[in-house]
Length: 345
Ligand code: TYM
Image (cartoon, rainbow, N blue to C red; front, side, top):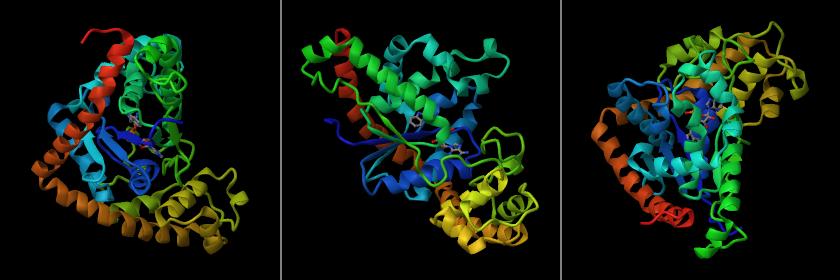
């Protein structure tokens, strides 16, 4: 494959960053830095598909940036920026709106969930959201995308869009000097094989942990203090049985499985290993151990986030620098797209 490996991923600045975002995405962003060039984006254009208070949006963009930096993303060695600074995302999204089919977008389960019963009243942006997501990735011709499991369907759509663009414009791609074998866009690969690709709600093991769950007790927020974290874990729903000593024994016990998954992901251990230690233990023993672990792992991150938030000018300068470096990659790609599609420039 001729495409240079490049990682891209994004997080929406819509408040309530939680343990699912951290374990399913941000923690893995940090790890990927060791092996790949990475671009991490605060996707503010995606956030406004649902109305956001303008003053709050600014704070939330800084907060996600602070979480990236506090978790260990290095904005000098890699690229951290907010999406709206790089106009090429929206520009390529328009071309992709014309490549993607209504039928493809109609199948997106996340739109159905977010729009709910009142579809007629959802923004056009919310419906077209996945084409912008495809543009985010492909405007850098990125090849690898670490995400939680809930984003898998959107990644499949991005692959379909890349494939259809390559086919629809095959002759022009070759005429413009690109390798016709590869096509112009790569097929970006979702990386969902992390330790916790789907962290579930603490109140209901069948629902994913989510920013929009009305119950605060359903999620551990990155901004929670130690007492709140401990209290939420203590109140987490479980069943009356002791923990099993093997994975098999977690079948049909969604809440127990979720807590073991969270423990393993926080401790960088396998679930098997955690069960070897805690098999036979009651939740009255396991929950305090999990609470201690969660506090010990998250509080340094939360502390650094708070320090960073005290200096918004510094965060803004990191984003500005990242935006300029992202633009330098995206601009020539967009120029090539214009040539391929047949626009004059
Ligand atoms: P967002 O902002 O909802 O979530 C950010 C990341 O967190 C992951 N995540 C979870 N992982 C495990 N368990 C959970 N309960 C959980 N909840 C959320 C998400 O899968 C995601 O990786 N559409 C994206 C943002 C986006 C994007 C992109 C991602 C826009 N453009 C391009 C990758 C590439 C979203 O709304 O993520």
